[in-house]
Structures are given as C-alpha cells and as structure tokens.
Length: 206
Image 1 (tube, one colour):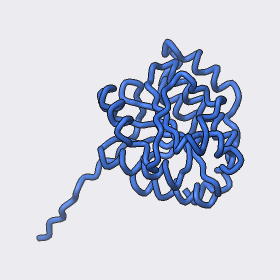
Image 2 (tube, helix red, strand yellow):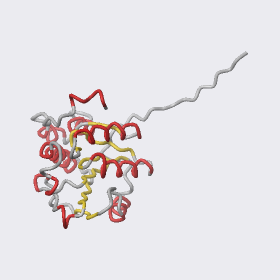
Image 3 (cartoon, one colour):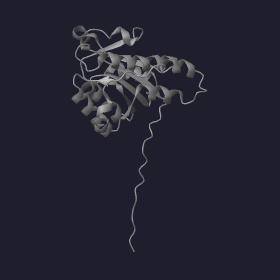
C-alpha cells in the first residue's frame, strides 16, 4: 500500500486593507523627469493613490534619492505636506523610515509607487518581504529609465512574492463597497481612466 503525502500550500490572497496598509512613495524627483519612461503618467497615477490614501486615512511615506543632486519631489505628486526622507541607499528602508513605520505600528501591507523599478523599488520590496510585509507594487505607478528594466523588474519582483496591481485596482480594493462612507470621494479619482504607461503590450511578460 502506498501513501501519498500532500503539503497544503495556501496561496496569499493579497487583499488590501486600510487598517493594515502604508503608502510608500519612492524618489519621484525633478532630475528624473526627462529620463524615466512615462514619468508624467507614472507620477499622475501615484498622485491618485496618494489622494485616495488621504481620503482613507492611510499613512504615506516619501523618500528622495540624493536630493542635493537629483532635486526635490516633483510638485504634481502633491506630497508637499509630507516630510521627504533623504537617502543614498537604493532601498527606502533607511533608519528614518524604519522609525516612522515603527511609530505607525509596523503596517502589514505596503503599497509601493515610484522609481526606479529595477533599483530602489526592487531593493525596497526585497527588504519589506524579508520582514514579512505584504508588498503591493502599483505597476502603472512604477517605472525605470528603460522599459526593458521596468518590465524585467516587475517580473522578477512577482517571482519574489510581491503583488502586482494597478492604480484603479488599489483604490477599489481599499474601499471594497459602494456603501463605504468615502466611496464617492474615491470614485471621483476614477472619473477618467488611468493614463496608459505602456504595460499592456508586454502583459504576457509579467
């Protein structure tokens, strides 16, 4: 008689929750503007996520990569009221950010927007995953200088266990119900479709 042993693998669902999430906005700075693929649309999508986070009382954290040389966060992101943490490391998980996360009770989920996908977004994701944090990368709010680096980074990060999502999907997952008290405010952010950031033609690669 043969006995088969089965290991039960429970897939992570990745359901976002306003009470568990933090929004991380990575290095969307002025000097990157002419060099990042689809920069304006990436920032536009990230700005929508930031607006929704304010409506839903989700905390947000901003970093800037070597701001002395690369300039400040671009104004159209709408993050002027947030303290930007300067860094030189590729990961966002510097001491100041770690302390801010600790003060927030170490959120279980991170919503991640910014640049560059294959560098700072990747390193931040790896650090968060190693800490057991569930990472949701907003694919249409993340980019690199080249579309090749961007797409391979997203594919690699998915392999590592991050969830790939979109701006509109994040907003709808966070409210979950048209009866949510803030639904109409969030719905206004979805009045127009998110701008195309060149992902659809390469979807099979993800």
